[in-house]
Length: 227
Image (cartoon, rainbow, N blue to C red; front, side, top):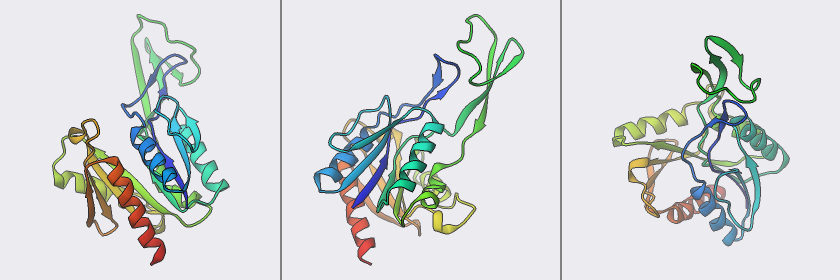
């Protein structure tokens, strides 16, 4: 099978030397990519420059949300993928305008903001890339999305999963097929607890490592292809 995996985290530039980023390391996408390569699949991993990189597969690098959006769309239109695993930590917002001592500048017009100034940043919301993956895809694909929470109760996690399933106002044909839920408070070293939910919000599997998660993704995808 052809498998596309996204990983790492986006960086949203403030000026030419500063950016806002998240704590994603790309470890999950690396482990997933290497698992599927080891099991004979063709894998493309779209990951960030600062992330750890998988071995023995095609890798496409990005920095910002715009970079990731462009790379994802290009790859989906160029090649047919059977499975897409969207594990990248994507910024919900990008910097839009910079206000220095009361004067407003458009992001990208400043090389370096001088120190000692009164500084504010206005942000604009980014679209949810997972809502466009099936729309861009050259062929029908099984889509796995991720939902990370932090110190959330199980009910809160389920609400977050539900929103991801129902987040595309255009058509239910573009919804993810599965959502993988994990909580930052439970992630410690190689321990990576997660729950995999289907469209009916049924928890079809619980895993404690990324390797086990990869096995469940493979098992569920094979079942879907054969049915």
